[in-house]
Length: 310
Image (cartoon, rainbow, N blue to C red; front, side, top):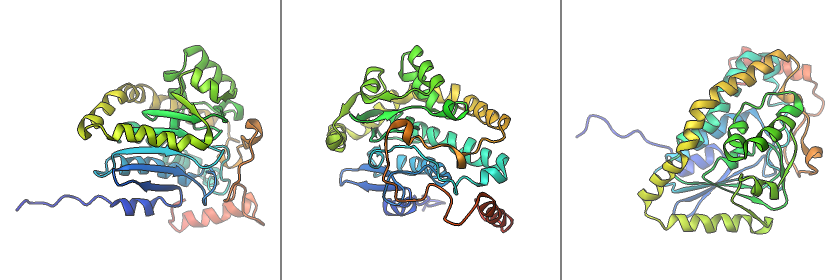
């Protein structure tokens, strides 16, 4: 008998339950997993909880023995366009801890885990307009709905674009185009995403997930080990990009935030008007009714003093 047993990995059902408030996760009998971002069943509202969860999700599903391919997508017409004010308030109380633990660490791990810790092919299905499009575009395959618009909003709110979107644009796009869209915050249409090489196809919205599964079904028919090893070869340039670029650029973004003391994610403006969309949110974007910034800060301070995670 061996001296130790294999450490038990969470079951797929346990992973589903762990992430259910942030991702709707399903799996077919042949191992094709679909991960859909959401907030209370509606379009995602970007939160500190989401920021924390996404890297953990990639690590758990990406090395799960029974997962053979991951399709990553969003909900309805919005990708990432709004911040949840209450979720990010801790940044206004203890910016150093928040910006290290929840921005620099979690933010880097989002992409590090997606690129380094996933053994299977990934298909990014960009289903809505907004920012943080790198979450789909840095998948091994990427397709987009034919009616969306994206931009990188960092410069529009006075931030440095160092959290990974720059790596995505600078690797996939012609250099002059990457510089333009990063430095100006201009909007790209679906057609431009295809033109600049950010996606391989644009697909009518009603056929988007059908097309994703067509691609997945084609890949899943290949021999298992070959499919997984080929994925690592395709992903190697992304791995090098992460090593060469992400820590420095993310650190630069955090330094930039400290030079502008008013910068706080709770009070970032919505992108919806800029993109011309009206998401059907199910969750809260602003502070709870009857609460103020100060009253919520007092509650968060009490939670910190009680030793709770915020």
